[in-house]
Length: 255
Image (tube, rainbow, N blue to C red; front, side):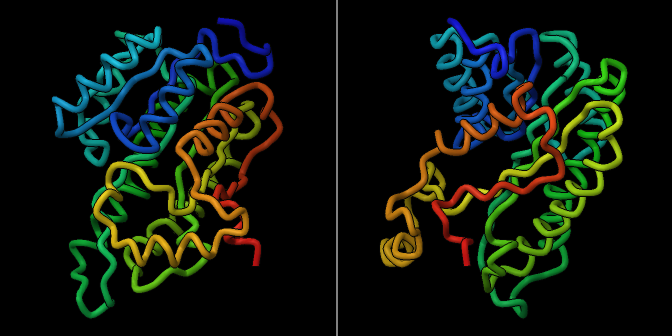
């Protein structure tokens, strides 16, 4: 397989959280096809994870299955050790894992749910970034890609818990980017719109129709639209791009 030198990820190791389904899977596969060795992370669904791993093997991607909870410090330390042993130290970190995201009026939320959002979108990026940065700094090269959401920019409601946590992750993205820039490490965010994947199968058709009418490009986004951006940001072609938040939604947030 031939790759443009600027976009090749040969000899790089990528760790993608929540990567055995949905957008995480699409990004992990694209990074692998660009030459990276990929750690596929999952927490609970072993059967699905093993099926995804088989797909990666069939595609000729060098990968390892890494099970663990990305919100627990000791689990993060173990997963980083397992990844290093199996594939090598992590050069590219994609922070994608997410829990369920029910939309509720604020009166119906409990703080425990807010805390879960903060654990996934602020605590987990902190723990994983901190674990990967010593290697990235030592080699003066690294890529950290936060997966955000247009929901923050649009102020989607009733959705305060998720939107607030994603806003915090956006702040983390911007501050960390300036902190680690002197080491040649970039930190960027990809904020997809509503891109139907497996977990959207049962979403109401009227909601889908309403959202589709908002998209200036008049089509649904595809997982490949997001994975292409991930490969670009992970590559040497994006070496001078950092602290950015790229919306992938066909122009929904143009206003």
